[in-house]
Image (cartoon, rainbow, N blue to C red; front, top):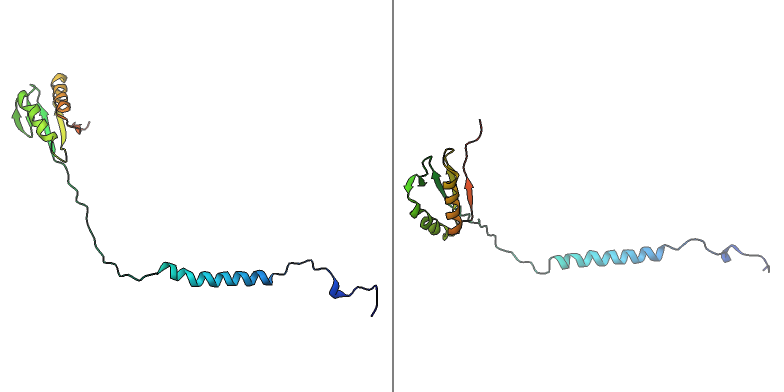
Length: 136
């Protein structure tokens, strides 16, 4: 044996030993492979299948026409000014509330259409639309 000489076995290692890290990784991988199916399918239950369709109730449409002479027409039948608001109140109380489509003649005074809109607002009608002819 020679003193003062260094043997190659006594040299300092510059690299990390990866074997223990790989062993830990493989153990964790095996644990996950075993536990995931148990977590996903704890109790097998055959659930019944059911299909339902949502019932869509379309509200009816009320057509209120105002002719050139200022006469009101409720779905093609003539009504008086006194009949307008009680009919609108009756329709406003329905569920779902019907849509009110106002068709005003181009020669009618705006005042008559404004009176119909005010009566609808007092009656509680929330959906009011105006029907016009598209420009040609």
